[in-house]
Image (cartoon, rainbow, N blue to C red):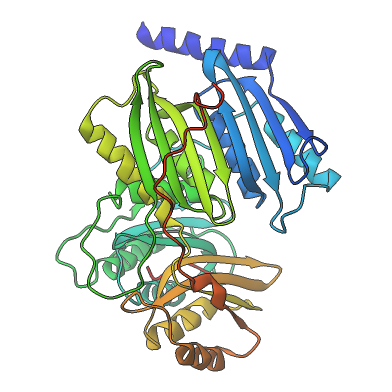
Length: 441
């Protein structure tokens, strides 16, 4: 009986959304230095993440945001610019943004799913998680190459001694997804052995899952690391570069029955997506919020409740929210020296590149792997084995081994950020109510 009522409520909610489709206004006149994107829609859980995902997937920078979703209606305003700091002038892009945001379907796939090996028509998706160690990505790439798997794209994150990767592979001969059950079982067995390494604790995860809805890759990485409890801090060995920590507070707003979350951290691309994604997957709803970014720092303030309408109610829950949001901010932090690879794609290229990194005692902290038009375009963030900045002489040696003009070094990415200011600001209710693969992990 209860299931029938739930189905009826769900159908009624869909009817309301069809009667009141999202309305999007994109304005280039009201603000001097940014394009304003305003979204009005019937409210539903996850809609804020949907909007932010569309904007960040287009590599747009959200400079400011004003969020309000009380009374069953969602009204948000975003000030956005392109990566060069300019307004969005391209009419084709503006039309695309408007069309995507006005779609009435759930364009963010379900967060459900398990870590594993998922075949699709175009590629096989491998999801991995385990203990981070130097050279891990190189070992994973070597195994995939030996098993005749070509990595077409991948993303790898490391955080708090844990590593996670979402890797899309194809058969190196046919260029299609790998579907043979015996071959998939072999891939799973050998990669699990690599992930386990010499560890006594078997904390690696990689399982075979049936085809289904595909979740946004970066959202999956957050989910995988969250499930692996990477937000629990571990003791770090002495040495290594010092990092600025995000400052997260969780307080009560008893007069409005909200929990107030404030975050101050170094600003970076996709920061808003990472925090909103984490709150959404932790089953919290943002009712009001404001985001401001400066030259180097970002400030976020959210008034939230759990999906059941209850604010954060215990000290343990409060501490967990702080830990998870700190982890969400840190996972994608650009720790290490940025190296960009651009070369003709070939089978085994990624394995060769990561082997050179390993032989020169580099640790890959994060990586983005992609191939397009026969070209491999990969980005690696690396440190030495202690977590310290890489010696320029080591970088020169690596460039000579890989080839001049193939590997590009961005030295300025390794600068350490200033610690965020500790002063408290209340904006809301105060001023106005290479085919290739995974990382080293």
